[in-house]
Length: 262
Image: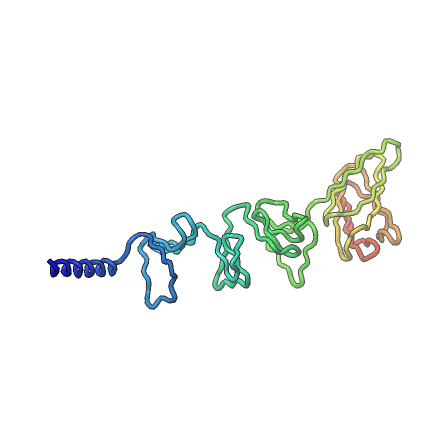
């Protein structure tokens, strides 16, 4: 009997050792961690390594182009407290013909508070308090300033935008008076006073070198005076319908570039 018990004990030990040596399947926690991995490790398709099936984990997916997916977690590079899906405390470098694609119109690039941001799928030039983009068809529109230190090339028409000024009828049988301070390089004037409109050029906020083209689109005359220190013209100009006047600002006054009687 004693020999039988000893034999059974030996058999149990051998079977236990054999079972321990077999590959494990399913989830098995590593309670003491791993100091190093001395060989390759293969993970079966759609299996994961991580904190749980609905927690932070790395999943391996066997596809035509294999996938390594990081799920239910924020990823930090040089930071242990990432606050977004990917947070990099350092420099990101992309090689080759790199492309960043935004598939959502609400996608944003933030952090460039003075120079460049991307808001709601558009490029914004300026600061975060003024949204310079007003067009939704892929155009870049700048409402404040765009400075180019070098050559600029445009393969198409350049639209300066329209500053439409309408001058009301005074109803007193005298010409209406109006101060025109352009906010765009193209101005359309509409004079609603049959006794004509007297136009004085304004200067507030006008940068030196600014050019403006002014067109009268109304049937009533717009009168421009040759005024020293304000508007240096070749002479007084009674601007009829569809006549045009081009001016340039030279620092402290407007100067005529050209005019047309159409």
